Length: 79
Image (cartoon, rainbow, N blue to C red; front, side):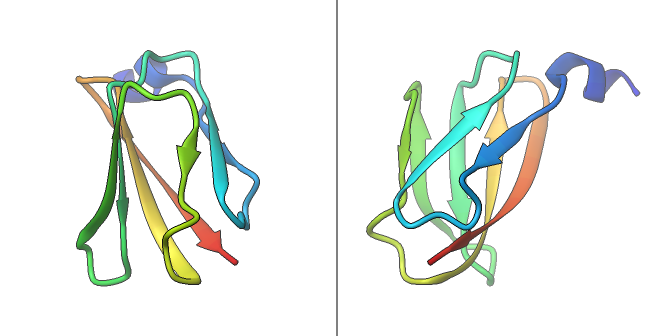
């Protein structure tokens, strides 16, 4: 579909992570939100190249990555 083409492939690593998260994509990322299991935004990043999730409790999170047009969601595990 068109939304997949706009974003290309997106990878978030290392996963599981202990602190720093790297997101690889060809798209220009405008915002990254980290959501907990209940869907609350627990961390927001704007125009950053590295994403520090060290302050988050251990668990599973959803990371939403947007380029302003499309949103890609990845599941990560914080160790």
